[in-house]
Length: 521
Ligand code: C2O
Ligand code: CU
Ligand code: CU
Image 1 (cartoon, rainbow, N blue to C red):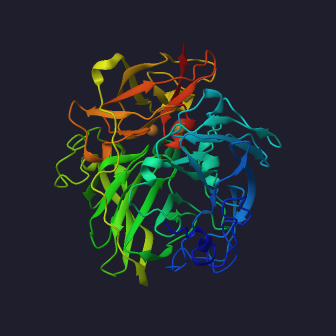
Image 2: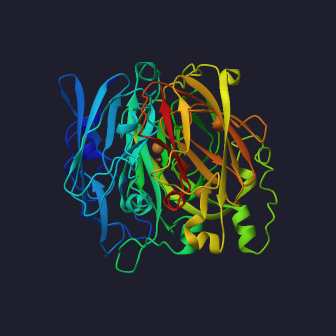
């Protein structure tokens, strides 16, 4: 396959200079032609530089520097931001299954940060959670073997009680894990050309251009949301597609907002994967719902030559709205599944549409590469065998209101708020378990578990929808819903250092909706 990476810099980044496969030094947001939030910008989509590290004695080494910067998202104003090797967000890290990587993460920030490898199976000491703080001026250098299947993962701040504000300012980036099995498939696979990552984040701005991050009770309860959508750090970006089939890797990197993605002309697309890998078979649909932390890979056919717009409808938990209106009813929330005529289905019933964003304006170029034929089989996944589970653990998500919340006891799992000194669960290595997650609150929560990729077994006892198939590390639990997932804990025992499980609405995580588990011998 032709390697077109060398043209990315000029063609996609509009003349910006990036180092392919090396340390990226370019500022993520260039000075040229800033977008106005109100006018359609017509600004080209920025593709985060692809960074493959350097090979040192058979190890792939990445040098990542957390730094402060200034970015221009809106016309006429500058926004103080945090980035990794650049001013906002970070490069896309490219690595291969089976190899050993070392991450040299140094920090020029003025507060303690961490960098967590979301979705990775690795030793707890390399996880990058709150137990691996990176103090200002110091360097953290974890090393681990890439055990993942090919997919898009991500890295982001997981600082104790500070994940929300740090991610909001930009401390996040994408990771492409590649493996032989998926590289052999005839899928669009040229980074930045016919395979593009889209990091979707909503942001609120102050008049002076700074991010308006708030920890008011409302913003903690609902999670911090904004009225402007940034896609790879650009407002209303345009992408010129030079292939008939375009593979888009969507990451909901927002702190709290849920989206339903789809094209404005309703055109169908194939969803080929979710969080932790490809599906066994592509799934034809016209929409995909992602909660914070979740990913999806889609392939869309542009061979009709017509421009199209990828949009995101914001979804609001209906229970939350009901509660705001004084009623505690959960009308409709559990009646998911069939409303959309079987497409996507799983979460439609529990949320209301609220706001519509433009994610990407796609303009097919006159000269395009011809469509390849989508494979009908992608990969083989091991069958799910719930019988092998040795136990079921229950997790009850709760949001205490009123005084309870003010006292800090608001956001809990099994009645407990996160405590760094407390181990909540201890799991035996090389065993399979069922985790049953129950949502006793009036709001949907994306439940994320470190160290593992799991399979969704059922929702309220019913078969999960098509988009719940495949390997997941984050699963939405609707109000009053009970979701069961099957997970296997392999190797990497540690008698002291835990992994986390938590709600991926970052304000909920920071407020305590998180627990810790050990994997022991
Ligand atoms: Cu993406 Cu514990 O986080
Ligand atoms: Cu994670
Ligand atoms: Cu939550």
